[in-house]
Image 1 (cartoon, rainbow, N blue to C red):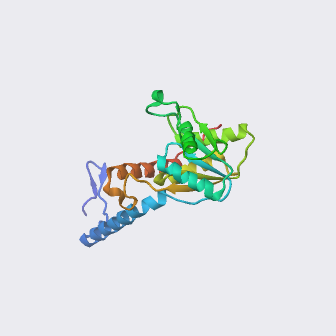
Image 2: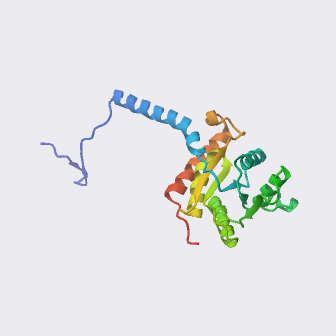
Image 3: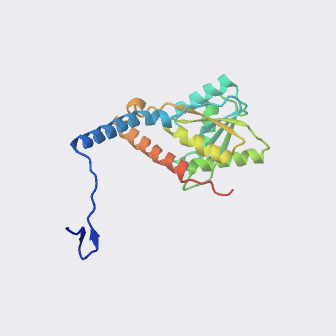
Amino acid sequence: MESNKTCLGLLRRRQCVVPTLRGWLLLALGFAALAFFGTREVYPFLAVTDPASGGVLVVEGWVSDYMFEAAIAEFRQNHYAKVFVTGIPLERGAPLSEYTNYAFLGAALLVKLGLSTNDVQAVPTGPTRRDRTYATALSLKHWWREHDLAPARVNLITSGPHARRSRLLFQKALGKGVTVGVLALGVRDYDERHWWHYSQGVRIIIGEVLAYAYARLLFYPPDE
């Protein structure tokens, strides 16, 4: 009987099962179908819209100008108590602007577009190198606490594929006592239905998939 040991007994031969040509073809078709449906469904998954009625409206200050117009329409239509604008320091042009933070810039834009200063409140966050969305949500929580406010419901307005991750991080920051809804506004930089045809779409969607996986699986809120 031929020994199954080789190389001075350091290695051993073992039988293994590998796919046939038909098996490889079926595997390839399966992966192709998974990639096809995954590519088409990833944007709707990320750009979730799931509003929570009532409460206050929160706008992420970095979103595009036309999204602030949509925020005003939402604010007026559903009669929110107030709209809060979150943000980090401007990354470009701050020395040339009177608004050094996206929160201040967004709040000023809402007032310029027709809201009263009594309806709008900027909640800026200082410089932060990581977990910026969570940091802005935490700043909002601290601002509420300092001003004796405790909204039970929040509707968050943000840009398309950022929505699912934003809601997750705001929920982690604000806590279980606050219901966080989200409104994902459509993007104009690329076709949402065929995002893989655009370099901007590929960069943003793949980045959001990785960032959401990190936020869901690896991110743990630090002690306040």
